[in-house]
Image (cartoon, rainbow, N blue to C red; front, side, top):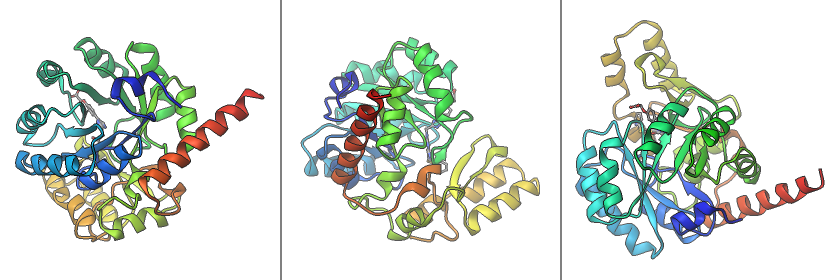
Length: 311
Ligand code: TUI
């Protein structure tokens, strides 16, 4: 199951792990890279010094390449970019904004720059600025999302750009990987399933909330603020919806969201915190090691693709 993306990123399997803030720590990233995928540390809102420590810890756990996800709504973006350049991180995934101004500096050290793009227009604009691949992430994904579904977004971006496309949003098993390849993607980025990896250091309550989720258990909050975020339904999601419906100003709504992901992911308060997860959460049944997850996905996709040959 090798695609050109594997050569570009020097990985065995075309599977990237989502760089989830507060969730994708050195342990998870190293485990995914050791298993032949691309592990990614989620920088989120970390100050640069903390990311530096996380990178050093990951380097202690793996000799394989791993990436860093840079969150463009963070107040520390410029310092984070300086840190990944100094550490010579080979793959930089960007999310929640336009990384245009940092592309030349990252490419100068030979890093592969891979933005998450929610639209064809942004994919085209960033491709012209020299990105190496794009991640087409549909609104089935957890966390901060765009408007289009993976099914509609991926083939439109595949037709619009001449760099490899990675599909994300709603993918958690071999069927999802095979479907992404059928849409023209060269690989997948998987978040929610890796939250439930044994090596993931997120609070056990957060994992269990995903393992117990059913198909209709996610909801999108924050659309009225311009930053829609998909989370699992709980007391926080219900309260946030009420605050939104009551017409609370955007700044107040945003203030009420601050610290809630950390509350769930680190402190384990999955009642009052924000449990970000994708719509595929209902498919995920048990905690497994990163290596078991990747093996199951690859074997599953190979079976789908070989069964289809008979159609
Ligand atoms: O970034 C994500 N997902 C995330 S980030 C995150 S951290 C967070 N913490 C607390 C509250 C809210 C978020 C949780 N989940 N996915 C990648 C992604 N990027 N999805 C959508 C986009 C995106 C949106 C607009 C990328 C570019 C963009 O460009 C706008 C522009 O500037 O043109």
